[in-house]
Image (cartoon, rainbow, N blue to C red):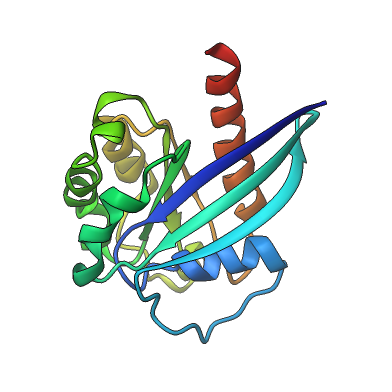
Length: 179
């Protein structure tokens, strides 16, 4: 069994569900009443994927405008990223370009490939007719910016939460093994 330690950054606009997603993944429980992330929060989880043991450090970035300038410094040493948006808020997806520009201010990110997974959150709102961003549109949008895959999830129901972190871990493992 191989052992990997990865730093992964989760970023996107405020209120899209980043902290709720990470907390659901780490604790297995849904908690709705989170306070706004100030700067960055850290989480860790050790798990197995494809006979590999992964120690994942998850850096959860505050999505408010005043925290964006912290991202280039905190992304140093990251092996992967998750860009999250809210399927009921179109601008939270189209702000991807702005987030990537901020991220690319760091030469380490600009000069090497860091896989980024596109995640549409709050999938449970689709059943209520609150979806604004269609699946195919978001998938094509992610491809346009070279994000390696697109997945939708619900922290409320737990749908695809484990899958998100397994996908990013598998991608980072593949990259590590090919080096």
